[in-house]
Amino acid sequence: MNFTPTRPLPYGRQNITEADVAAVTAALQADFLTQGPAVAEFEKQFAAYVGARYAVAVSNGTAALHLCALALDVQPGQRVITTPLTFSASANCVRYCGGEVQFADIDPATGLINLAKVRALLEAHPKGHFSGLISVDFAGLAVDLEAARQLADEFGLWIIEDSCHAPGGFFIDSAGQEQQCGNGNFADLAIFSFHPVKHIATGEGGMITTNNEQLFQQLLRLRTHGITREPADLVHESEGGWYMEMQELGYNYRIADLNCALGLSQLARADAGLARRRQLAAQYDAAFAQIPGVTMLAPGRPGHAYHLYIIEVADRKGLYDFLKTRQIFTQVHYIPVHRMPYYEGLGWKAGDFPLAEAYYTRCLSIPLFPTLTDEEQDYVVSCIREFIVTGQQ
Ligand SMILES: *Cc1c(COP(=O)(O)O)cnc(C)c1O
Image 1 (cartoon, rainbow, N blue to C red):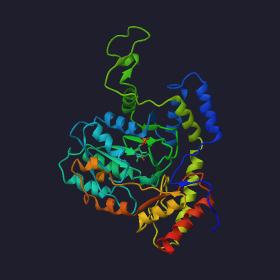
Image 2: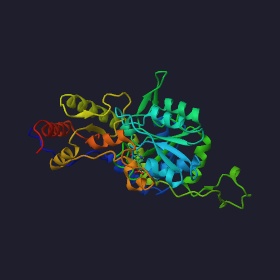
Image 3: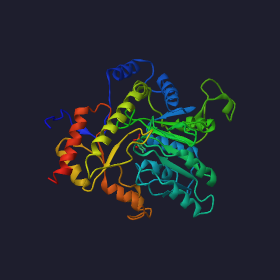
């Protein structure tokens, strides 16, 4: 093949248009740089996009996770279950509150937490031993939260859905209905990230969605120092127009108006971006079906939002290094969280979650983003084919 790409091809990248630039410029020239009208508008439109009642915009996805753990009152010593196959932040939010993280291994066919393993963990301990479940819609494939909710109700758990990979994704419930990631029908709280590699970019940014009004109100306070100005909520009588109360220990996890102006502009194109991701994924599926030695992770699943397109190969490091010489910059998602030295320091070790560990030795995330052209994609496929078919270089 004669095509040579005119730009490096990373595994993911943002798409900034003229409309985005105009939206940010307008926000810069308006009255507020932070806490202006774009924040509330972004929350409203994002809630509508995922089908949730409430949304709270915050400074990044990790702050969103921390606020969720605070709102659900994670206490020192409490135990929370999550997957080892995620970005560390999914687990770290438990540690911020002094809680203990318990992992449950993955289903190797999907990369998602195996709910049968979660059930086995829950049944092996007295009720109350675990407080919550943090599920992760890994790579953009939604966890079956209807099944997770049944389990949670049976054992008295709350659920945080880490949906950073899956805005626009859904699973199909037992009644045949599409259940959008973050719609609040099953999880108590769901979180999203607007880091530039994710579907919607705001620079840094995050969102929490929920259908629970009480949690929503608490998140609003926790996001801004634990402060309230609502007359009905005051402990003391108001002393004038300036009066406010700091009622609990909150944080400054606000996001600026500027970032939300970009988010609104990006959100308007989210459906088009998702459609292109799905189209590219289907084209990869068709191409790799012809290349023995390349296994696709969870191909052809309905509702997949395709944050990542992941293949599994025997010589992962060889392929990673080879593609780099061809200006294709792949990535590995993820080194299992329990293998991070910090978590090893808490007692986890190699061999604890063999399926996540085996997956890790083979996985590679290859370029997938809405502006990837068909020619660039063909180039990626042909380089992978060259490596696999003609042997190692
Ligand atoms: C990106 C990501 C986060 C953290 O989001 P930030 O905005 O970078 O803080 C958390 N969980 C998962 C699964 C992610 O992919």
